[in-house]
Length: 460
Ligand SMILES: Nc1ncnc2c1ncn2[C@@H]1O[C@H](COP(=O)(O)OP(=O)(O)OP(=O)(O)O)[C@@H](O)[C@H]1O
Image 1 (cartoon, rainbow, N blue to C red):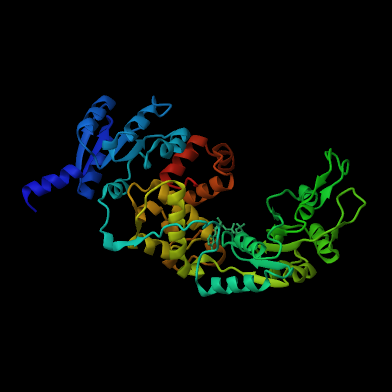
Image 2 (tube, rainbow, N blue to C red):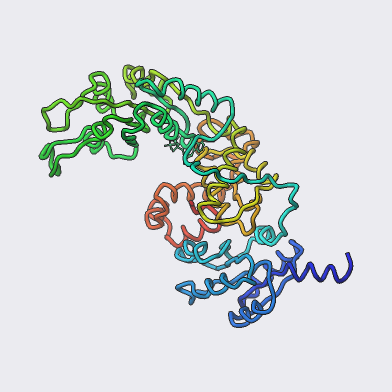
């Protein structure tokens, strides 16, 4: 390469650091050297804006300042066209900064001490076009359809097609996140009841003492606190489909009541006299092994046979890796459209990473990984670093199986990996409510948010 050509390339690929911190400067410079891009620094915001006004940068790293409470500084840099990809770094990022960063236009928020490898990956030039799996255009109307063509999923499609037209009760089994609810919706949509309601109840999410009235309803005064009549979900599903999710977590008393409702096709509201006729198709689902619950006396055998008139099993995603590519492209296209991001494709390396991941959270986890990657990738190609797949869940460690895989845990993990997994899981569970997560984890909420950012486990 000639001297001039080299200079031209360097001018294109320059990273600007704005901020006055020796440790950050050293880290960013090291990442630039590793990525083969030029490094430039501006100590103050004013200097930085001056530099940005006369030269273009591939990426800008901004040391987030505690005084920038409303993010005005970040917004100003992010909106400068010459700033390129914006990366924020902070020593102890506040929860607010972590949540606001993507909205303000930052592609990444990194903590100090800097992860030089991650930074270098962000600065690396886009990979050559040949290594990219292109993302298809999203066709209009593609919503929540079942994606995949593995033999296991095709068998599910066929069964759905065969039984949708009947009113037979269907039991859908499979690990959490495998698509049981989506299958129930597909059964409803393909049935003669699609004009009627689809009512879903997560039996494990509703406290035991409320579940009965939630399902069957109650009359006014049926119990303390029943100040008005309530129509239950069975009744609300009349003319349509009732989806009873996590049926294996229901008490034996309620199991008996469900069985009766299914057999008699009638219910009574709590505290009521009248029998109410039902025209409801029931689809039930569970991630638990019902035959073993029957063996331990925790699930009624007669209810099992009543529910499993047709049984449909959704295999875990790691057992049908053939579906991963189609799902990844589907969700990349969908989230790119949803978040108005131009995306060309996914690198071969990233696709391999997806195909060899153990997916303890199944399709739900894949969907979250893709959404986060689409939001946070700086360029128009998704690379393996953008996926932030936890190495602990790589499939080929040979130990992750059965119940352990279900929980993403393996005895080869470091304490940090276990902590990352647990914090991510708790945050998802409490729907990103950091106060509640802090209580569960018995940690200060700032520690929770710092660790979540550090480990890259903020749920999408
Ligand atoms: N084959 C698939 N194609 C496209 N999206 C899918 C597929 N399977 C699952 N998903 C998506 O994954 C997510 C989880 O699916 P769903 O809620 O149906 O799983 P589930 O098995 O009912 O989970 P849980 O047992 O935790 O309730 C949803 O966003 C769903 O749209």
